[in-house]
Image (cartoon, rainbow, N blue to C red; front, top):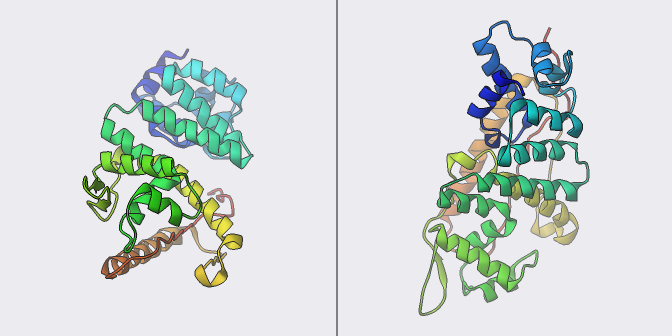
Length: 287
């Protein structure tokens, strides 16, 4: 074990990261702050991976960390219990290619992260994003001409979910204070229009939700008639400096959609709008 690196790893919680490369960068930056002459070659050596530039390649996304090397690193950093399990799952997620297996690993990562959260309300917020159904049920509570019970809502759901699953979603939403149940009618109503997530889980919470919604969008191409959906995409070359501007345009579009939705007098359907912006080329090395 490297006492120097394990001390830093104790202060920087790996469970606060969703990308092990960013975690390693944080460890390295902290080490270099204490020792200005610190290098990636020394970093690699102190992690127990030999005297090479391997960690520089890994941090910059040019190499993946193997599971074998990950087992060595957890010892060098002194990672134990949930931190050790969490780190190893991050490595496994990066090395998995099968989408189903990746989903299983991602669910485990969220589960481990939830175990490390002491605040019960924050854990429930993480649960909200752990399954695609919760967000849909939350919006269905606002639908007109629908009895807001698990039985009635199940009949309208696409894709299908069981009555028990819908009821579990309603129970979670009630515990989060997002909905209330009328004792006489058994009907649920919204307490607020939108779900606001705790900063502690913003890096992790939406991942499983986004993953499922992208999958549902793919299925909608063949499941939903063309006149009931709109699917479009564009591929374009831009300067790296323009990415921030593109994100700002997307954010303004989302705000406009939310504003428009809040002005509707009635609501009889729930729709999903996915927006993705991601690179299709690797970063160019700066000279």
